[in-house]
Length: 498
Image 1 (cartoon, rainbow, N blue to C red):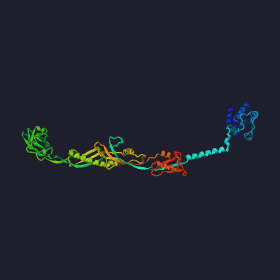
Image 2 (cartoon, rainbow, N blue to C red):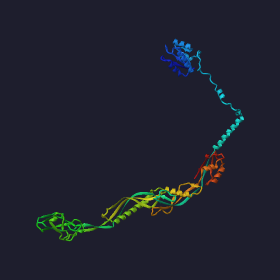
Image 3 (cartoon, rainbow, N blue to C red):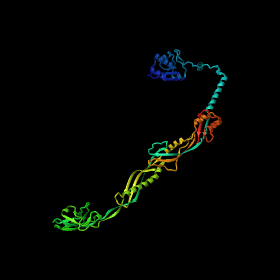
Image 4 (tube, rainbow, N blue to C red):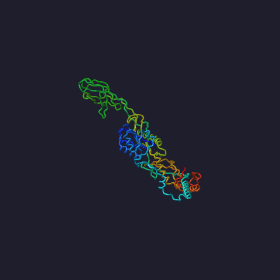
């Protein structure tokens, strides 16, 4: 029997020893006192330890050399041993001086207690015939569950198809905001930015000065002093506008009143307007006008003009229209390429949305034989989106859908021979042939309810009679030898092909 050996320390007291005994999980507890120990020597201490051991359901024994401790142990009938090894090998005798209320009793007969607790079974339940009947019912119930839940079936149906086709008149405009079942669609804008240049000859002409006129000016002294006439002295006519000439060399006026000097002159501005008759130049600009008088004794000659080509307003207008037309032609080819498949382009709505830049060369009023124009424009046009066309076509086709049929494909649309036409109000009309594939409507739930629990032949006949099918239905049952379709619809799978 297992023994818990507790080695006491010199400082142990009653409380600490009781705690050590509490941790023991054996039926025998051996307390080993240290040599010359003076702890727990009283008979009362040993009595309390003995009772604590009995409370724990264990027997207490002591190893001690002190005569006082051994005498107290003998009084309490506690087994005494010389050392721990001897105590572990020997069988301890229970003390006779104490009642052991906490010692374990004989084990309880659990089977007898269970027999007394359970109610007595009725006699008829032990009869063999009754047992066989209940067993048979259980087998039948299991078989019924297998019949109801085990079989499964797959039914493959190929419905009848029909092509639905219709010619629809469409109308689109910028003021329409949503698809209208009456046939109206919103018109969307597509734009592109292009640039180009064009050159054309000018049709106008202008007279421009060529060479200046020259002549001789005669100055007359109005003073007695000698005067110097510097080169560049300007003389002019008194007309409005004045025609001005300038001296080309320096001159000296002799002293004395009425003295004269002739100096060469040249027109300040070239052109035939400088050809003046004699006596036309009579005024001097500057301070010399108070001291001198002037005239041209002979006509001035040599001033010429020539004709030069120049642009006119009509030239600019014609070139502008020609370049815009060329850019619109490029837009007409580029814009449809930027649309998505199925969109319908409206060529009659093509226009210039905005002129981004426009540069003429040469500039206005400058001469030149040709006029060039460089322009960058944003062109735009209207179109109908394929999604709107498909939506409206679907509404029209749904209205004429044959009874018992449902759509089986997307709507396909193609333009008729006439292109879209845009009127003065910006409304575009056109016609399209739309079509789609339809198939006979099959309700899987109703189909399952129609054939559940029927034989394979009956189910196939019922489906062929009730549904519009191209071919006979294909019914597969699992297991293959089972002759009926499942009773429960959720065990039947209906597949629609096509």
